[in-house]
Image (cartoon, rainbow, N blue to C red; front, side, top):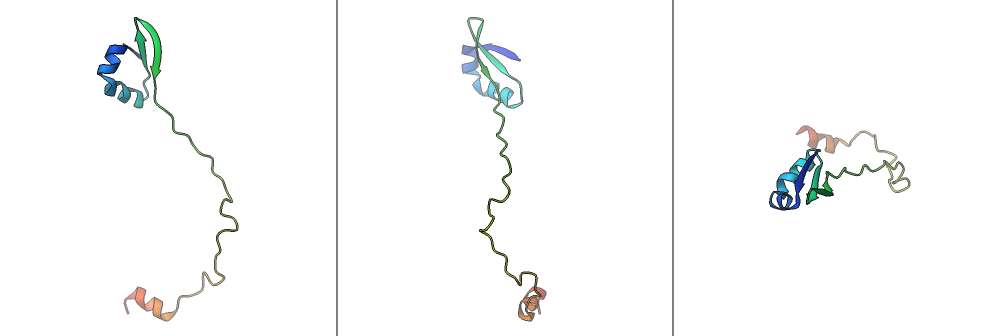
Amino acid sequence: MEQVNIYEAKTQFSKYVELAESGQDVIIARGGKQVARLTAIQPVKRAIRFGVLKGKVRVAADFDAPLPDEVLAGFEGR
């Protein structure tokens, strides 16, 4: 954890943001007294919600039926 004064934090802000991104906290002080902490934000992990599309998606009854000869010929380059 690195401690810097406000003036230095303002003049080299990009450097301290990069330190925070890499996981190192930066303490900002005024007159030697700690007043703020610059730290990385952890991304919010969303929970998986199963069944959201239930009843909204329909699969045709002949979904896995063989393709017609004309369509197969197109895929095979005949």
